[in-house]
Length: 259
Image (cartoon, rainbow, N blue to C red):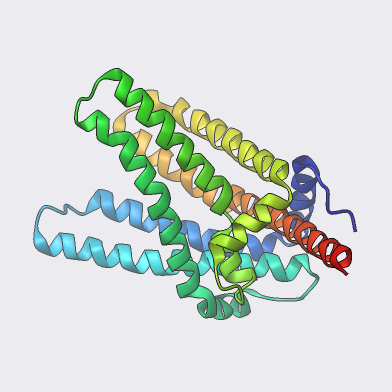
């Protein structure tokens, strides 16, 4: 089995997998996008200045948070099953997702906090009106740190679902990344280019009136959530499979050498 692949080959394979299983993947991504849309619309419509409205908004946030994460895990399970040739349906994936819910959520929040802390140190000098040199230095140091941490640990949430037996998801992610660093860098680079392209397309509607602009923004985000996000997830998972295969081969070769 050839474990060395470039990101464009993986992208082609991801599109093929999506086309052959689009009904299942779109069902899950559609429901996930609806959750995001409901929270966005609710936060725009509800005035959070008084206690009752603020409480309602918090409840909506908790509910959409729960279903969004559970549907994201269900999508991972669906992709994993179909990639390995197993028949599965939405009900099975959604039910199984509960088994990994807390591990996935805690790992995702921990990763977000790690990255968020680096961003705080970038923004802190700006809020303190520090000198341009200090702002630039903090941005360079902590921005670089955030990118390194994202590079090393971005697979940690996926580990919690695909390899739940692993004791430390972050160490496992770092181990996988080191097996094919160029592949991970190309995946992150492709993801960045795609995000910038989508941002510029969305920004093209900025000249419309505020209300119309918000409506178009909601629709655009919704369509991305439904049609683009599953392909991103498939690419992300296929890179994970390649890294895991390479890492296993390297461990096997090391064991053979020691013998």
